[in-house]
Length: 430
Image (tube, rainbow, N blue to C red):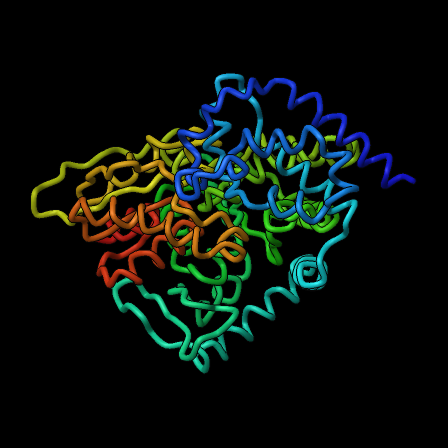
C-alpha cells in the first residue's frame, strides 16, 4: 500500500509539471535523437504526450511505455531550450521511477545495481578482476587514443572501440587523502567518480596535482561509491538512495569549503538529481542540499575560486578543440571555464569546433541499449572534431571521453582525447 501511495504521489507531481508544456515542438530542433530517427515518439514532446496517459497506459502496456520512455539520452537539450521552462529531465527520471516501481527491475539490472553497484567494495573488486582478465578477450585498436576492441565478436562488447579498465584503479594508487589548506586558504572534498577511478586514473591524479599546485587542501575519503546516476536513470530509487547515503557518510567525516569533481555527470547528479530525488526524505534532504550547494565542477572551482589566468599562445602550439558535455553546459551552465583552463595551458592553442555543444550520443545506458543510434550521433561529433585539424580534443566528462574515443577510433583518426584538467596539469610541469 505504501508503495502504491508513493507512485500515486509521484504521478500527481508529474501531472502538475506536464501542464506547463505547450506542445510547441521547439524540442525537435535540438534533440539529437530526433535528428537521427525523425520519429515524434523519440522527442520530448512525444514522450510528454505519452505520459499524459501514464496511469492508463502503465496498466495496459507497461513494457511499451518503458521502451519509449527509456529511448532518451537524458542530455537535457530539450529542457535547456524549452520556452516554457519544462523540466523535462525531472519528469522523465521520475516517470522511470514510477514505471520501475510498478514493473520492478529486470533481473539483469537488479543484479548489476542491487547486487553490485550498491556495494562499493564489491564493485571495486569486480573492476579490479576485470582489469586483470580483460586482455584475454580484447586487443589494442588505436594507440594514440588508447582504445581496445574485442578479439572475437562479443554480444557484450559488440563492435565498440572502448577505453579499457586501468591496470591499477585510482583508489589503489591513492586510497585516501587529507591535506591542509595552503596558499589558497581553501580546502575541498574531492569526489573521484567511477570512470575517473577505474578507467581514467590519470584524470584523478591530475586533479589532485592541480589542486595541490594551487595550494588547495584536499579531503578524499576512502570507499567512495557511485553517484547513483545509472541506478536512478533506470528508475531504481532504492539503490540510488543507498548510494547517496553512503557517500554522505563518507564526506561528513571532515569539514571542507567545496566539493569538487572532474566529471560533468557526477557534478550534475550531486547538484541537481540528489536534491530532486530525496525531496520527500526529511532526514536526508537537508544534508543533501547542503552538500549540493557546496558542489562545483573542477573547472568552475579553479576559475572562480582559485583564479587561473590565460597564457600567451603561439602558432607552434598543439591545436586543441573542446566538446561541451551536456550535463556541464546545458544543466550547470558551465562552458567558459573549461575553455579558460585550456587557454591557461602552455603549449596548447584552442580552436572551436562546429556544434561544440551538440550531444556526443553517449547517454549512459542508452549507449548499451541503442548502440547503433548512439554511434551515428557520435559520428556527427567526430566529423566536427576532425574538421578543426586538431591534435587533441578535450571534454569535461569521462563518459563523453569514452564516446568520442569510440567514434574517432572507428574512423582511424589519431586524435588524442583528454580532459582539460589533464592538459592543464601537464602544462604546469613544463
